Image (cartoon, rainbow, N blue to C red):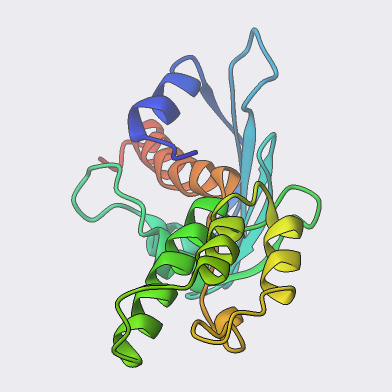
Length: 197
C-alpha cells in the first residue's frame, strides 16, 4: 500500500504542537490531536540525531548537527526524500516493519523481468510446458515465505534462478513513509509556531 500526502495530511489535520523541551538543538516536540491518541508522534533532537517516535514506530536518523535543518523543506512544500533519508536512518523499529518491507508485487515483477532476461540471453522465445508451470507457480505466490520456497524449489533449466536473490523485493514500508511525512510536516508546524516562517 502506498501512502499519499493527502492521506497523511488527513491523519494529522487536528494535531497540535506542544514544545516539551527546547535548549538550542536539544528539542522535544509533541504532535497530537488533543481529543484522540491515534497518530501522535514526538520529534526529539540532540546533536547529530533526530528520534521520531509515536504510533507509527520509532526511527533514529543521523546526518548533521541540527537535524531539523536536514529535514526542513527547502521549497516550503511537503516533499520528503524517502530514499536519501532512508540512508541516514541508523535505527528502526524492529517490530513495526522498519524502513523497508517485502513486497509480493515487487517479487512478481522481478520474476517476469528475470524470465524475459533469460529468454533473451539464450535467444529462446518459448518456454517448455514444465517451465511455464514453474514460472506460473512463482507468480501465484502470496507472501514472502511462499515466494522464497518457490524459488528454492524451482528446477527449470532454461530459466535458472540461482542468482535471483540479488534482486530487491522490498519497498518503503507504510510506517516509514508516514514517519518521513511526519518529520517534515512537524518541522513545518514547529517553524510556524516559532515564527520562523
